[in-house]
Length: 110
Length: 350
Image: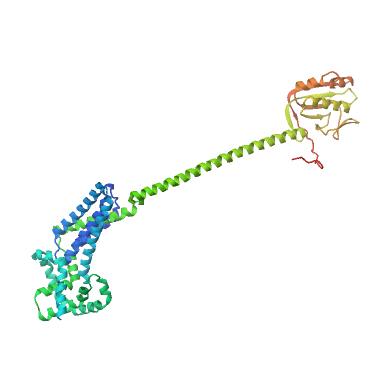
């Protein structure tokens, strides 16, 4: 519940403050957000599976974000940042779909 | 009943392949906490499930359920019947937990989620998770906002940017060409206006000259005033006046007018006539007598010389007993006007 409340609070903060993304962070923020979404959906699925672990969730969340940002950074350095970030988004999207499918199977048995 | 059971085993195996391997890895920790709500849930689900089981049966019998389950249609199609018999069996026979757990994961999920959401415990781990999710929501909305606010160019790929740039270059070239052509047009119009103005000025000047020559415009310029003073009791004859006018014309006079004693001035033009009449000279219908004052515009020295040549105007007037006096005020004005005659027969040749 606190997690949901915190997320709502974060969204409200973002709406109220209307901050601008620093230029240095611009390529990484969307990828990091998608990676974090992947971690969140994985956590929800684990909770439904009854195997949710706080520590694992936190570590996977942080490492997902960092690894995604690192991959994009490497891609930028190698000159293939656009393609690599697209690849990351595709992979994370597939994972999110899989997790959501598992969640759906749990919730709706279909 | 045998087939469903076999399928039920398959079905029970399937969800574990998603989640049960970690489950087996550490059985006591996480499974213990959900176990409590599961148990409470199973009782309710056992009562409620026949109704709930009947619904999926009907629902799964429809082809739409199969269509949804694309890759594994048989398993999904069997899923509905599975749960029903399983629960019935478990309830009737009071069988061990294994089946119950399988059924429990099916029944009170919503209840478990609700329990998980509304657990009031606030541990450090929960706080960290809440913090992470708060940051996630913040970053999410920030990214959405910045994406919506950013100008489209900042997100475009270099290829698109190059294309846009070349488009802009081509447009700039076109506009430059248009500017130069418009500047040419401006120059042409300006020169046209200038030449037109020059023609207009020339025409106005010519109209002025013709007006002065024709006697329809007042004139001013260097010149002198000639007074022909007759002998007492006499008048200047028309011949003398005509000779004087001719002499002045020969000397280059450009505009002349004659006035007499107590009479208005008359402009002298090409058609002016002079006849003797009682009381003076009839000039263009006006009788002018007494001292004749001729105002003439022209070179004063030439006119003076022309008047004083032997046998000229001066001598003629003196022979008649009169005198000629010249006044040279410098600039004189010829203000009398000649009424132009409307031409009836003559037309200009273009």
